[in-house]
Length: 345
Image (cartoon, rainbow, N blue to C red; front, side, top):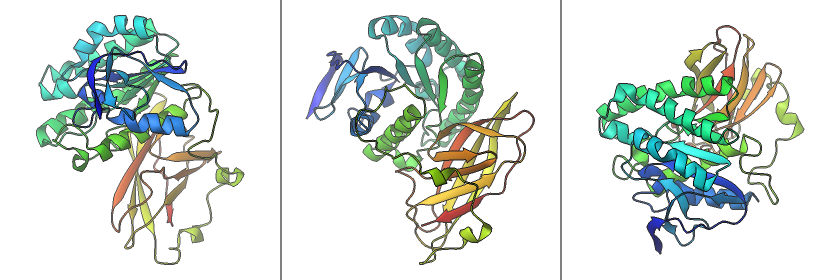
């Protein structure tokens, strides 16, 4: 059973107010409720109390809170024209922003899209200066020409976010594009149910990485804290030998963006000749780098030593299959390219 879209029913539970903000991908076109279903389930399972807010209302009856601010077909400028009123009405503590897909689909002044996004973020942080604002790169599109435009737009987002964060704004990057592929799209634009759930897992991991963005847990956590040994230096080279069954993996590292004092990196993990159930990547920074914000992995650090482990949705890989995680980091000079050690189970 799906509830009819319309004005919000104000299903307030007194929890931390979170506004899902964007277009049809936030609304849940093709899969009513979209990523909000999986996000709600993870939040509830983690023992958090969250109140989704917004002027719109839709999703299946099983979704515990149907309020959102997703507007099918809307561009960045249309969201920006209404954001001040929505923020006054909903007063969110946290904003989940995924917007820009329709700027690409409508071929609407695409060169100006990063500037429009910058202005929208500035309006949000001005109207709600204490809110935690999570800005996502937009998900892929199946059309190759449009996907090229998506990548151009997305390439500007880390610098936009970093400049605001560097100015003391509560703005955080979520690399949603890295999580999905065209295979996760039901119609070339909107995710399948599985694709929306990947988005949900990525939002949830990002929220949990920023203390207070969804309050504090009052119940069981969906991912237990790392054991004390997880922050130890990387294991000796012998740890990269395939365990019983020939399970193995390789990992490659690439700096995908750089600005004064900061950088963005992506790590691609590829399974060997046999399927794997989980992976761990370890490396040693050599240029004074530190990791600040991570998506699609759980990272622990001890000095220059870094260990990254898969999250729930990207640990299992078939033979030869790949997945990717990424992070934002700080560095005083130019970031290096460390040697990675990948182990699989």
